[in-house]
Length: 461
Ligand code: BES
Ligand code: MN
Ligand code: MN
Image (cartoon, rainbow, N blue to C red; front, top):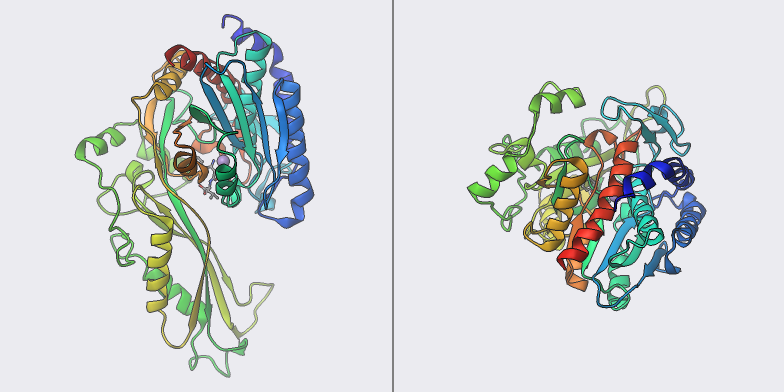
């Protein structure tokens, strides 16, 4: 690999230009208005796989957006690495908070990225991260350094729950068979403190609708005498947590995996500064479940959050009205042994129970996902850990991540294969937020690290 660094430096500008092309397409899976763009993005990813040297490149149709598949099988006695990523992105809203349009990528320096960062929706989540794999592959192929078989599976519905994927996995077990799954869709603590994500939380996402009177009413004529569904919804939401910030849904914690003191102290030994954490978010104080640290709250404990709430009049000026309906979108992050079906049921029962007779309640489940934990004593993990140690000059810290990638648990269930979460984003990269960006240092280091992963893995296999 002696020319690896040199190859990356020489091709740096082209690597960035190619990524820019992908970032220019608004592949927003949540919004049907962007259907053509999502499809166009799948087509472009397909072309990029072809120019990078992959074979059998095709768009696999699903009931939703297509999955881009490609491979390069060099020797069936070698290990096979399946690379997973997603080409869809989150909506850019609130659009007015972006310094530049979200689909017109540009480079700017930041405090965390003194060498510059690429600003665009999807720069870090996940276009910039999955594209590192195509360029690592390009290098390995061109320089005769490819030491493993490789399969690519880049999907277009991750940000909306990957609902068509379990079907695809079940029907394509043979095609997707592999020894390890490699995913860059997570982050590291910082460029000075590299880490590997060793767990993901699961997710239950639902929408609630509270109905009061059968039509919007004059708030003077009826005010005080009928239930206002917005007021009631707020009271009900307030009842979902107690003053210790514990979730009050009966049985919510029943199956939660309780970690040993050893495991907890390992989690808390990862470098973390509460002062910096608060400063980065402009917060006077942190907040969360009593008895747990911030690292624990954001990694190994389940949560409940309102993601959006609406109803009534929100336009210009004032309108005196008691609305007929109020709505909220609520998500719960789950930890090992909790299941999405179990929690959806417990939430629905409780939410219906606490509703007064003056309103009616409807709970609509959206999507879910199962939590995931990866071991740290496997050749897969060691291959990743040693690759990072070499490229970053420091052994990575294992960290249980708070986010969710629903496919990871499905891969384990359907293919029986574990995933390695080799992501390079920073918390400050603002994924899902305005001004999302991805460090150029991280982009190039990622390409280098991924290449070394393949080398290490082939040697250890
Ligand atoms: N890449 C993220 C998940 C992530 C980010 C995990 C950072 C760990 C660290 C992924 O694209 C994502 O946003 N997932 C969603 C879940 C999905 C079902 C909408 C999430 O976690 O909210
Ligand atoms: Mn992602
Ligand atoms: Mn995401």
